Image 1 (cartoon, rainbow, N blue to C red):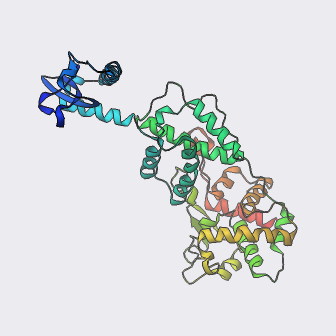
Image 2 (cartoon, rainbow, N blue to C red; image 1 turned 90 degrees about the horizontal axis):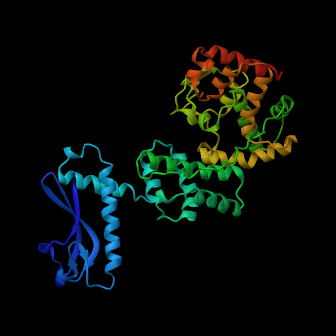
Image 3 (cartoon, rainbow, N blue to C red; image 1 turned 90 degrees about the vertical axis):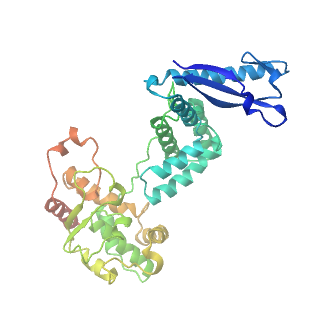
Length: 392
C-alpha cells in the first residue's frame, strides 16, 4: 500500500530560499514526488506536513488536503497496484489526472482527428461546434457538463431562432463529444447530462411529387439553358433510382454500361448487406448521359459546375426556376429521390428492393428479414423499369 504525505525537499530550494510543497508517495521501497503549486517563503513556514506562520496557511493546507485526497482516490481505483513501481504509479496518477481535466475544445479537436469522418462531415462539425463553444466557452471541462448545461444550450439555440432540425444537429454533436469523453475516461457522470432532455424530432421532408408532375418536368420545353440542364439532372436522378448528386458526379459511365454499379457515399463506411447499388441503366437515362458525358466517362455539367459545391449552388438557384416554369410548388432536387421511392412503393415494389436501390444501411440486420434474403441487380432493374413504365 502506498503512503502519501506533504513535504518540502531542502535540496530543491528555489531562488531566495523559497520552496514548493510536494506530495511524497512511498511505494515498493521507493519514494517519488508530485509537485504542487503551493509555494512558501522559507522552511520555517512548513512543519509536520503543514503550512504554518502564514496568513493564508489555512487556505493552503485545505488546498493540499484536496490534492492528497484526490491522489488517494485515484490510487484506490488502481487494480494490481503491487505490480507497479513507484515511478509507474506516479505516471499513472498524473496521466489519469490529465484525462480528467479535458476541455470541451480539446476533446472536439481530438474527436475530429481520430474519428473516421468524411471531409464534408468534418467541415459541417466545425461549423456546428462554433455554436457549442459560443455557449460553453472553450475552457469548459467536459466533466462539468450537466443536465442544466444541456437545457441551457437548447434555450440558447432557440433564443437565436434556430429551428428543430438545427437544434437537433447541434445536440447530436454534443452527445457524440460526451460519449467519446466517457469512452476515453475523460469524464464520468453520475447522472447523464441528457437525463430528462427530449431531442427535437427530425423533420420528415414531404417533398415527393406526383407521377403527373414528374411527367410535366420531363416534357418541359424551354429555351433557357440553365433550366434545361436542371430539368435533365433532375430526371436523370429519378431515372437512376433517386441517385444523389455526389454519387452521380463520381460515376464513370464508360465503365458502367449497361450495368450501373456504385457505392453510395453517405453509407460507404457503414456495414451493409449489399455494398454496391447495381442495376441496368434504363433507356430513358441514356440520352441525358450521352448529352453531358465527357471524354473521361464522367458527366461534364458545364464550367465549374462539375464540382459538387458548385452543382449544389446551381441546383439551389435553378430548381426554383424549374418549379416556376412547371407550376410545381415545394420542388427541390431531393424530390427526385423522394418521388422515385414513393412511386415505387405505391406500385407495390418490395421495400427491401427500394432500400437496395437507394443504397440504405439496414439497422439490426441480424434481427430482421434481411438476414435471410438478398436483393439482386435483376430485381432492382425490374423495379426501376416498373416505375419508369408508369410514366408512359
